Image 1 (cartoon, rainbow, N blue to C red):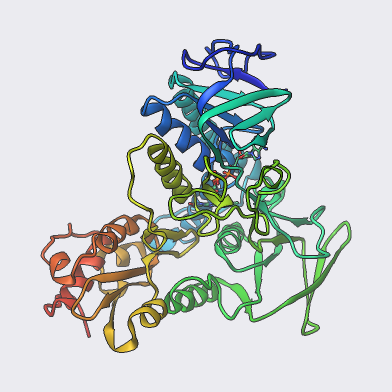
Image 2 (image 1 turned 90 degrees about the vertical axis):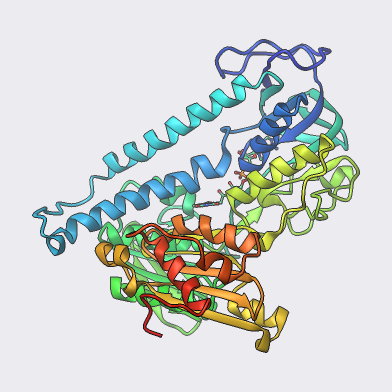
Length: 487
Ligand SMILES: Cc1cc2nc3c(=O)[nH]c(=O)nc-3n(C[C@H](O)[C@H](O)[C@H](O)COP(=O)(O)OP(=O)(O)OC[C@H]3O[C@@H](n4cnc5c(N)ncnc54)[C@H](O)[C@@H]3O)c2cc1C
């Protein structure tokens, strides 16, 4: 049933059936808005909040939970699991640091309650933000695009006078013939698994696959990753891929790269995977992490004339679909499927509709983090991409090994900071591997997006001892004045 709460914004024409349970809402009897947003995940709610800040009246339609995949099934809960995994590793390795502790195992219900608490607090906060935005009417229910300027929810039409924004997100994909159920799970079920696997098989060595592989290994599982492409996290710089594979090998995670899945069978106790080369693997869970499919089907898009391409809704650089007045944001739009891209696109579209003419988002400038142990983070071009775009003779790279970084030594992590620059020109890419390097990508993205020259960055002072000094050292070396550098 479509239910709504609102502030004092929208015009009133239709009586809606009931109040949504966001506290404190005022019944809405009207349904004409400046913007109707379909989907309340990262892309959709960011758009709604920014549009409300700009004084636009918004209907935000969500059929499940405000916050979408990122908050409830993606970014946040997985990072809570990874943090629990880090604590487990800390306990196991405590003697190395002179601390007497014993690792007695994983209390999975307690891990789940910690994860749920983190998500719950953020969910409450987000609900509060939306509730506090008077101009947003939150509509609970499944929406359908019924005209280029209207979305219908359970028979109630929400009319958009300026634009409709499609933000229906994505879902976990599987392979043909590989049915999800029982011991064959996607990230959705893996998050809430009620046992710690003793042998886990992970199909897909992308960001989601390596994340769960890392968690389960720390929790004590034997883990095998099957990846059809020649390396794990194949979109990253080749040096980062190699470093991650090496680090995983050291942790006892097996990576079968260049291996193609053929079939899987399961019984009550185990699941068996057969590869195309005839090899078989047996585990107590198979995680299918072969990517996310865009959720462009079944919401009336094509019927209204919006082009849908294998589930994606293609847009131009201003996020306009082929139908005037209809925009799309987030995982639905071809490109990086990341929450912060969704936020940025949502904000962009709100500002575009409000007539602010925001700068086009540069996909290459969006920072990327692969969360596992060790972390991998990057922004801008890989070395191979830079060579392809600029020519080999125009590209210079420099790799600073974390072996020379005091804080990294204290943490006991290995890895590097790699800088890719245009020769005699700006930095075009940064790639990092090591514990906590996800936190360093903030500086990396400033450097790349501001098109800084190494000489500019070399003049900036990095606090000691921090891991960010590794960035400083790389730039000192590139500026011709290396300090703690062996090469
Ligand atoms: C395991 C995992 C880990 C991840 N980790 C990270 C990470 O660390 N960092 C990162 O940046 N990204 C991460 N992501 C990706 C991130 O979650 C997505 O990029 C992001 O959620 C996309 O936002 P969105 O708004 O496009 O879609 P979604 O978040 O999927 O939101 C779409 C919303 O639309 C709603 N909806 C769909 N159809 C309708 C309809 N007809 N009517 C009403 N409502 C509808 C859905 O219920 C959903 O709430 C992760 C994803 C997964 C699965």
